[in-house]
Each structure stands twice: as structure tokens, then as C-alpha cells.
Length: 386
Image (cartoon, rainbow, N blue to C red; front, top):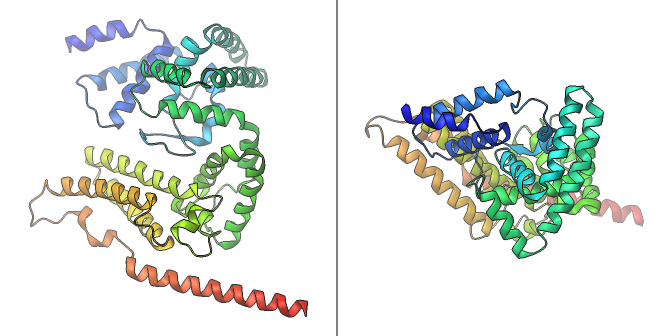
């Protein structure tokens, strides 16, 4: 406790921006499963200090206006993988520090001073315009900074001073891509329904057409458009249908050649995030939460293996196998805490609600139905032409 008090005496003298960055990093480390003695007390004190300063995450601040276009694309947790189309919320504080201290320190100071006055005066529209102007300046500066390998390495090194996260540099690249396409992304987001409970063929085809139009002007931002679709889906793994629907054979090679193929990788990202969530749930003895996560994982695995042929030896299949092996290890470790004669809810066969072999037979039936339907439509077309 004496050591915590000494550390806190130092930390309370830091400016709010640095305190926020430190808090984000401590929270990220906690989510990664890295326990440090006294960190819980330090996190609580930092949150209280930031609330007192008015710098909480949800409050209006210069940084919250700057990062506003990212809102629907942010993901909580600690994804240390690429996570296509999504940006780790925990990366924002370190990237903001880098912008203000290293990239554009004078412009960032002027922006912060101007924004504080606008926010205090409740001039929301003027604050939004100021944020857009600064976003453009930052985007151009980052593009210039990263156009050489040396610049990329300097950026990585500087970011490493603020966070140990391996995803921070990748998140910086994604943030710049979102800011460049912010208007197109916002417009696409407005065209989507608030909730997609039933992702039937008609809805799939409609969104595929919307994505095709989006891709014509903003192809590099496609993963973000797909991520917005995923947030609307009642069953997120169904995002893969945007790739498999356009592939007639459903073989892994054909699916990979479709315009929305990255949707499959994004569903694997979802599974990796669930693996992390499962680890945290088990760590905190939230077995019922862990059970529900496992059910989602098994359903997603089933969907991928049934809907994409020859998946096993592909890069997607190898990644799926790795994720499932890691999840199995977590479940085994949890079950090993109990005697063999005591069953554990996480090892129950009922959690796997689908039989893979039966599912493949069903999928073959779907394919036959589609083939018959396509043939009938083609015959009708020929009759109509004669």
C-alpha cells in the first residue's frame, strides 16, 4: 500500500491526457490477462481523477470530437490481431498522445485550446467543423510521415512509448483510412437498417448491391462498411454470406475470389475476440457467460465449416483450427479444476447444437435447390426469347 501511495503521488501530477493514456494502457493489460500488484487501486484512482477533471471517455473533449467518425467501428477489449474493419478503443489514447506530442505538437495545442472554448460555449457545430479541419491536417501529416519505411519505424517506436499493444500501429493506419472516407462511411451507415434480424436472400442481395456501389468509390474502406453491416446483424457470423452468396461452388478458392471475401476473415476476428472474452469470463468465474460465449463460438465454427468447402487446408481453415485449439485449451484448463467424476457445464456436448456431418448434407441439399432454381430460371429466359 505504501508503494501504491508513492506511485499515486507521482501520477496525480501528470496532465489529464497522460493520465487517460496510462489508464487505457492499464485497462488493456488487464484485458490481456496481465496482473500487476496494486493496478486495480491505481485504475480506480485514475478514473476518479479524470472524472473530477471532466475528462471521462463519454464527455465532450477535443479528442472525442476528433475520433467521432470512428464511433461505430470501435471495439472494446484487447484484440492483438489485425481485426479488419474494427479499431481497438484502447489504442485511441496512445495515438492521441503521439499526435499531440510528436506528430503535430503546435497544431494540436492550438486545436485543443480552440476546442475547449467551443465546448465550454456549447458551440457544437463549430466544434465539429474545427475537428474536421484538424482531421484533414493530421491525415495529411500521417501520410507524409509514413510514406517511407524509416517513417513507419519512427512511428512504431514513438507509439511504443505510450503503449505496448502490438495493434496500435495498425489501428493508426485504419484510423487514417476512416478519416479519409468519413463522409462515404457515414452515408453508407445511414442506408443500413437499424437491426437485421432476418438475413434472408433478399436482404443479402440488397446489401451486396450497396457494398458494390460503395466499393466503386471507396474500395480501401470496404472492411469498415462490412463492419457496419456486422453491427446490425442479430447473428454476426452471417456476415460470411456476403462472400459465399456470390460464390457458385462455395469452394474456398471461389469464396476467396469474391469481392467481399474479407468478410470471412472478419468472422474469424469475431471468434478471436470471443476467445479473449472467454478467457476473461473464466478468469472472473463467470461460468454462465463463458457458456454463452462457447455456444456462439461453436455455432460460428459450424457455419464456416459447412458453408465453405475445402476450408480445412486453407489459410482461413488453419486460423480457425488455431483459434479452436486455444479455446479447447481454456475449456480443458477450467474443467481440470474439478474432479473427473464432476461434470462441467463447459464440457457438455449440448453446447454443440449442430452436427457437422448432418450440416454438410443439408448444405448439399441447399446447393441442389439453388442449382435447380438457377436452371429453371435459365429455361424460362430461353423460352421467353423464342
